Image 1 (spheres, protein in one colour):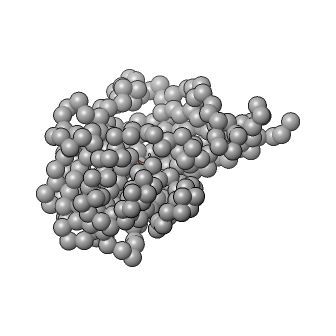
Image 2 (cartoon, rainbow, N blue to C red):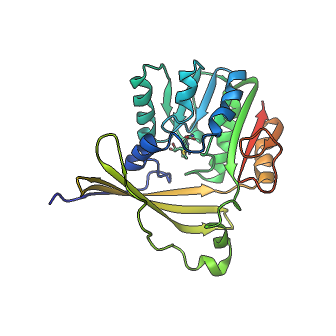
Length: 273
Ligand SMILES: C[S@@+](CC[C@H](N)C(=O)[O-])C[C@H]1O[C@@H](n2cnc3c(N)ncnc32)[C@H](O)[C@@H]1O
């Protein structure tokens, strides 16, 4: 029997590498579909645009397909490689870069920069502030920044661990893998994640993801990756945007062009340079 290949990797602290990048490329194009038209309307009003943390191109590829001028960057070379492969398959012209957002340094300036599902991932709070400053630097005068966050109280599995008594049971036990799904190369992929730590003082949560790849019922590869997320409340991010020299910041609800409510799980910050 073939021995499984085990890779223990903690690159920075984002888990979007290896088999998890493959999972994103294969299965996540339909994830949270209402986000796609939401950001697209802003891009249509302000080209060229940059997607920071573009991942495997869930948003970027449809925009480029629609003829919009959008570049992408991401800290994960594996996610970028999947995105590039998708673009090349369709013959779409796209400029992609591998950079962490706090080291963003690109030759072009943009009318729109947007970050979807990635602010606070695999970074320190100081790096997050530096990232906002870099976004400011990469925008044209009057350009628009869009950054979304999932609010800390959105996840009912996570929220109880802000309490001391609940937190002492962490890390969570390794759960069962998600049902395996068949990828386009005939392998079957399965994931399982768990909360490892919640630090309410630092407002940071750490997760672990275990990924497996099977072929014909035989385990071919397995990987374990870590992800840390800095959690932000609305007022804190508003202050950071101000410190990064943004003006006229408005906050919208869950990618819906409306004022936020206390029931929104996601908030979008729309800031002008
Ligand atoms: C949840 S995925 C979202 C991808 C894409 N924006 C989307 O909505 O489909 C998060 C992405 O953020 C990237 N990422 C995480 N930390 C990052 C950082 N510090 N700088 C740049 N990209 C980062 C990951 O590699 C991953 O591709």
